[in-house]
Amino acid sequence: MPSSAPPRTRSSDLVRAARREPVSRTPVWFMRQAGRSLPEYRAIREGTTMLEACTRPDLVAEITLQPVRRHGVDAAIFFSDIVVPLKAVGLDLDIVAGVGPVVAEPIRTRADLDRLPELTSEHVPYITDAVRLLVAELGDTPLIGFAGAPFTLASYLVEGGPSKNHVRTKALMHGDPDLWHALCDRLAQISGAFLHAQAEAGASVVQLFDSWVGALPRADYARYVLPHSTKALAAVADLDVPRIHFGVGTGELLSLMGSAGAEVVGVDYRVSLTDATERIGPDHAVQGNLDPALLFAPWEVLRDIVVEIVDEGRRAPGHIFNLGHGVLPDVDPDVLTRVTELVHEVSTR
Ligand SMILES: Cc1c2[nH]c(c1CCC(=O)O)Cc1[nH]c(c(CCC(=O)O)c1C)Cc1[nH]c(c(CCC(=O)O)c1C)Cc1[nH]c(c(C)c1CCC(=O)O)C2
Image 1 (spheres, rainbow, N blue to C red):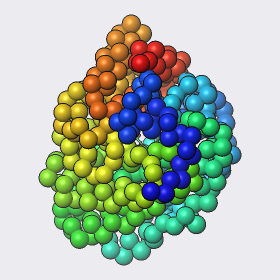
Image 2: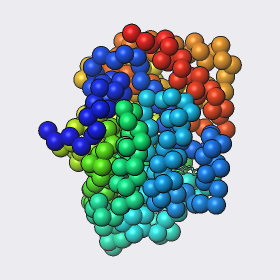
Image 3: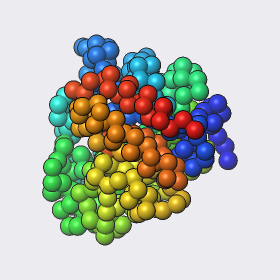
């Protein structure tokens, strides 16, 4: 199997945990560890829009490294956004601070699909450049590449922006299944190619974010989502990189998500790791699942909860410690450092 990931990260605890191999201690990283919780991030981002920052390899590399230096986490997550590949293929969209991705003209008809060509690595030279810079800097620490999953991307494209109820998305899915599948097939190509570009340039692990898929019942997930997420994950099957698949509110979907092809299933904080492991089965590692809101709780309380999650994780086939969703912007970053140290301390084998 051809491997593009740097061989020196092969024996890292993160990669080993993802492969359900023994680790020296539980690896930990935090979704959204780079970003507004860090004063050094707010300083470096001043005067640059989010999407502009994503196209500058020097900025991307520096922002990606900031939380690794500060917290001593076991992985870097590439600084970018799930909508960057959509912008790269020419779609008119922006990331509005405090709101999220906003699409100028939503995609709702077959003709609209023409505005969404397939992605090749030529669309994203700044991504592969940034990955190469990072891999050189990171040494033994793995870099996690990522993409948005077809459902979550489709939701932004069909709604035109963030949505609470995904009304237009669900109406399209059920009202015009052919168009839905055509849209998601295209998005699976784009996400898969985006993951492939990052892994080929040196990312050691990839994560497919299906953040909003918890809005669906199992039957709809199986029919309208699973084949497309499977295609996106299969796009990196030729590279030696473990895959993580995560969504929010996915308690009812966990077993199906496990069948999409990833080695690791991300678990949000609504389901215990013990229950999640039972649902997903012995062939997958799990990632999670501290409630990001609990980072605001008194340390004595937080401490016990972190220890409990580490203990549950030790009984799972493999465990990567993380939050159950992203870091909230106003969290005290010192708490993240303390959690990292605690996970390492109590899990050392
Ligand atoms: C749904 C989703 C998006 N983007 C992403 C997801 C999936 C993860 C999740 O469920 O949280 C993925 C993402 N977005 C960002 C990262 C960077 C790496 C990291 O996790 O540290 C990652 C992995 C940077 C970002 N992406 C965004 C920011 C904030 C913009 C800024 O700092 O100016 C960052 C650091 C913008 C963004 N982009 C999106 C949202 C909801 C927002 C926040 C809007 C806001 O509250 O301002 C879409």
